[in-house]
Length: 155
Image (cartoon, rainbow, N blue to C red; front, side, top):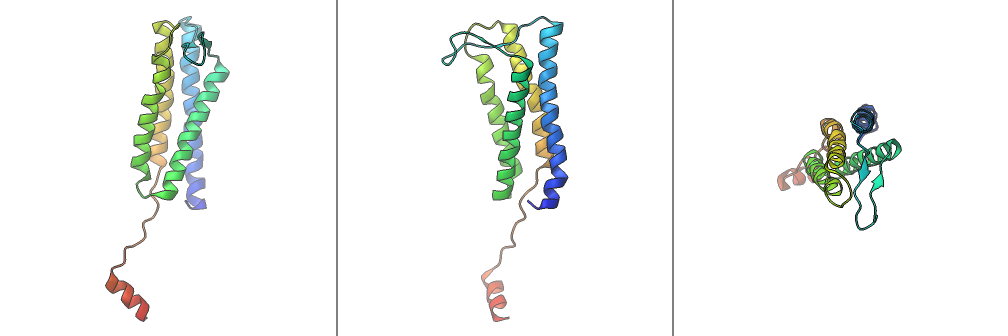
């Protein structure tokens, strides 16, 4: 990626990350303050009891995962001309995989699980389209035929 292209897409991508964090925080705030739903992660193999989820954990998780998505896209853009499509498939698979945590485990009521799923979806709805829209393909090198390469060598 050229430096110019990086600085042109960086602000848009950074806004997407911040927007994803803000969307997750908004869902958490509405759940906690408006509906009185105490947001917790379900108990599972790593945690015998449900774990409380506060605004700090929401912001950290949303920011880290959005930045990971950005990083994967940046690597793909350097490696392949098909980065945009490959990244979209990976992002959607990551979203589906991320829904495994709120939908598994025990000790959390249905309302809490719905809030967790909504937080995941809120981040995805902001981050995935924004990163996809700002993605670009690595410039393709022109393919030379053997006749063109012979002409080039003769010159």
